[in-house]
Length: 430
Image (cartoon, rainbow, N blue to C red; front, side, top):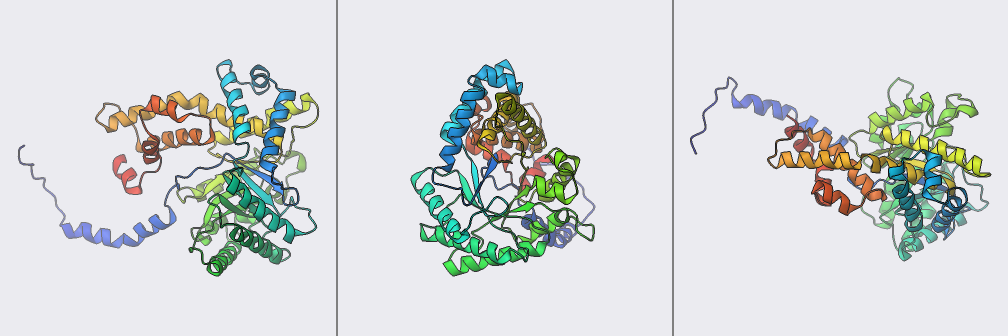
């Protein structure tokens, strides 16, 4: 091999060194604030169950009720596809996957609710019972992948109650075997970043009291007030809330009805596709981008109950809202009734099945190019494609074997494309 030709430059090496030295604080800030997606599974939904109604069989009961709704109102693939407008090519596959999901894993994320949905008379007892039942569920394999509570908020009127319920619940988990890996807490009605800071102090105190690693307990921030989007000084308060969480924030959840009411939207028009909702979620999405904090859409209050006609109308609405959210990169939402599960999974499965082959082909082409092929693509596109395929696998829309067959990639390969290090992504893109 011949000697490499020397290239002329005009700047001394010290210039680059000085510039790099000046940007060290920025480099550190980027790494701290924007670590990227954690690469863990994100549930497609969160189910809310009142603390006084939560029982040992809640997960299975919701699945059975959802299956019964299918049996009564859409007993076969063709009838279900007709309600939702699914193509003939997708009908059998989606319907079969929905039924299998409801039998195997009907709920991906469950929150025992001690806030708006709670009307029990003994919150201490209900919080302790929730801890015991969740611990037992993880122990016997009947738990949803993610489970936890929504406590009352940090406003003065209910602050002490929220703190006590959090303490009782977490203490109960510790007494029954420790904190499960799938533990999730949701802090509602956050208006000021200082309320997030206060909750962080609470979790720090609990971790110290129980000898846990610092930072072990994370939580979601629920966005339900206009002040959480736009602060009094005109800045995006939600961005400050993420920072105030000190690395503990795992999600931002949009509260459809509280937020809409806060803005004066009349009840008939309070929905996740209202322009006010779109604005709030867009701000949340931009604030969370790159931080590792995930955004969740809200819910619909139109329940699929009553006559078959009413159920079909509610299913069409829920399916459409879910597909709309997925197209806007809100990969998680809330489900408030067992009858929402069939259309949640139908929408999610159709979303991934429809785009699967094209996404797999594009990623396979990129991987081939990276190995010396002649097809070029952007690293950011490869990241998005791999993330799409991984989400599809995690929820059951796609099978690992079929993804591997069409892409030639393993799960480890997909994880590598989906979560590149910052330096790798920027260097490859230039």
